[in-house]
Image 1 (cartoon, chains in turn cyan, orange):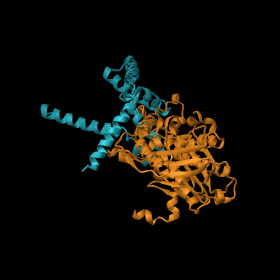
Image 2 (tube, chains in turn yellow, brown; image 1 turned 60 degrees about the horizontal axis):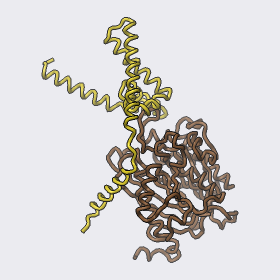
Image 3 (cartoon, chains in turn blue, red; image 1 turned 135 degrees about the vertical axis):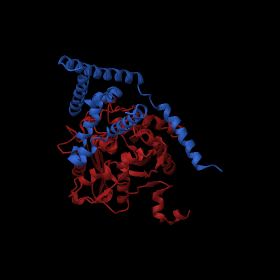
Image 4 (cartoon, chains in turn green, yellow; image 1 turned 45 degrees about the vertical axis):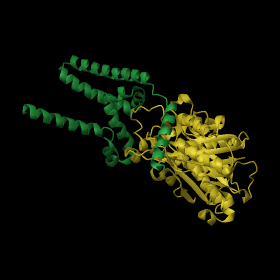
Length: 154
Length: 351
C-alpha cells in the first residue's frame, strides 16, 4: 500500500529538482568583486580617519576608537539620506560587515518604526536587526572572560 | 455521490466537477481602474494606469495609510467610471497584504459601501472576482466591486526588513508593487448597456498546495504547483484546453516561476506557450532592478484592471483566463520553519 506521506515527499523532491533547473545562480564573481571593493573602500575611509586623528596628536589606540565612532556617524548619515541601502544592494557583505553596516542596521529600524511612536516604535524596535549581534557578542565576551579567569585566575 | 446529489438540479448544471463553476448570467465588467506608484508608472504599462503617484507616501504620514488611499482612489475611480454612487454598490470585496487587511479596512471606513474583506495574498483580486460574480449569479447583488492593493514600502517592513536596511536580494526575489486595482461587476440584466463588455463566464476555486519550498525570496516558485493544480482542474472540468484562450495570465509567478510553470504545463499535456503572460513580468522592465519581477496583491489587480481589461474592451483579446497565484505564509510561519503554502484561483473572462 503506497504511503501518502512518502508520495508527497517524492513529489516535493521532483518539484525541487525541476525548479532547480530554472534557478539562476547568484552572480558569485560579481557579488564577491563588489563586496571586496565596497568593503575595502569603507576600510580605506576608516584608515584615513585614523591617520587624521593621529595627525591631530592622538595615540594609535585613541585614533582607532574615534575612527570607529566616525564611521558609525557616516553609516548613520548615509542611512538617513537613503543611500546606504543602495550601497548594501551592491556591496552585500562588504557593506554589512564593517561597522557602518552596524550603524545601518540600527538607524534603519529607528527610521522605519518611528510612525509607531517613540517608545513602542522607535525605542522597542531599535535593535530588531542588531539585537542578535549584541546578544551573542555579550555572551561571547562573558565566555572568553570566564575562560581567561579559569586559566589565569584574573 | 451523496453530497453531489444534495446540490439542487439547477445548481448542479452550474457546478462543474470538484472545483469549477459556470456563470450562466456571465456578470459583465462594466469598469475598472488602477492607481500605481512611480516605479510601476515608469514600467511598460505606464500609459494604461488611471493615476501614477509622484511619490510612494502620497502625502500621507505613513506608507500604510498611503496604501489605503491608493486603494480608495482606485475603488472610487471604478465607481465613477461605472457611473455608480457609493450607496448603489451592493458589496465591495477587497483585500491586501497588510496584517488583518487594514489597507482595505481603512479605505472603506466611514463610507456607505457594504464591505467583505477577502484575502488570498497576490490572488486576492481573483478571489474577489470569483466571490463577487457568485453574488451576482445568485441574484444576491446587482453591483459589486472587487479590489486589491499592495504597497512596496509597507509590505517590505512587515514581511522583511526596514526599507533603509542594506540587504542584498537574490535573483529569485520579487518586488512588491505599489499598486491598487478595482473592477466593477454588474449583472447584464440590470438595464445598463453591457454589449461588448468583458464577461466572467467560468471560475475555478484553488486548493492550498504546499510544495515544500521555504525561501520567502522565491515566492514565484512556491506558487507554481498551485497554478498547475488549479489549471489542470479548470481544463478538465470545463472541457476546454489552453488553445481556447487568447491569453492565459498568471499573477504573479514572475520570470523564474513562469518558466517552471510553462514546463510543468507542457509535461501535463497542456501547452500554454506564448499565450502565457505573467503580471509580475508585465509590470516592470527588466532593467528596473526588480530581480525576478513584481508581486503583491496590487500587482495582479492593477495589471488586470488596466492593460488586460482595456485591451479586452479594445478587442485585442477576446478570451482571457486570469489566474491569481498567492503565497499564504507570514513572517512568523517562515521563522518557525514552515514551507510556503500557495493558492491559485482561475477566472475566465470573455468578451
